[in-house]
Image 1 (tube, helix red, strand yellow):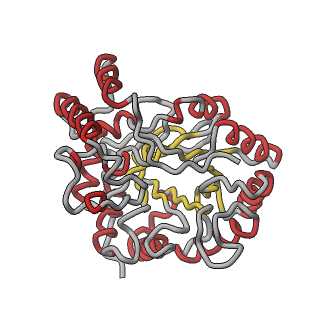
Image 2 (cartoon, one colour):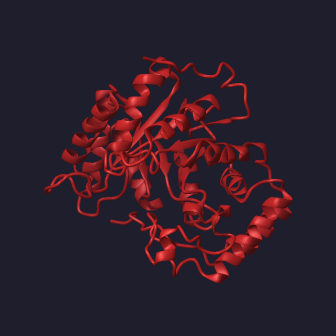
Length: 348
């Protein structure tokens, strides 16, 4: 039984929308990802409240993947329940994306993969978990160095022609591989709609050619982990919190641990926080706004653990502009010695 009615003013708030490359689709400048906090081990009602609040505030894009959880697949199942109970009347207002590429099921066909069999089977499983006939965007989640790129892109084009994926994307591909992927898709008369790379003040690899490549191709860009998995928040201002996995010497889900979070890094985080305070923002809000300072960035992909955390992140919308002096000062603390915590999958 449905008891949710979306806010009537959901498109009259402070959310902005940007065109995705040379396509006909606008995405919200802040999108919500379900990588963490929406799995089977998390509170369904908390996740449901976050999703409803996000839509009420103008977020129309929800990003998933086959392996999101834990356990893998449970985030899509949870989202499917919310679609059925709350979002069904609004399906045509939503952009729903999923991905495949990381290990998902036992045996030789469900591990890290870019094969035709793996990708097609994975999308069929994702559609079943979410109760959908199609996703709006389907991504190759990572490069599979053991599979020809032609096979991976051919599988994506096949699903596009079937109507199971309205748009095609890739994630964590290098500039060179992005060009090759786009060329293969072009032969199939399928545009490369969007690229999803890691991007934050602490991880600027995409500025070394990828953004220029995407602009040339007419492909959108949505950056994930704009908060550097929590580093660019108030969480580490006083060092490693006692409840953090890194405090026990264990890496978090992004792979950084106690050895990564040094006193020098904490000092840089505090300096960035001081800049944010002068701007009237939290550090998280400034970090999200910083990612969006380049008009080639279609959207920043955030996560949320609570409704309050979501609202805090959306507060970035009130301060997207930066002065030249602010950007230069941010670079003083964030540009050099980047925190490279993400295991790249961008080479064959």
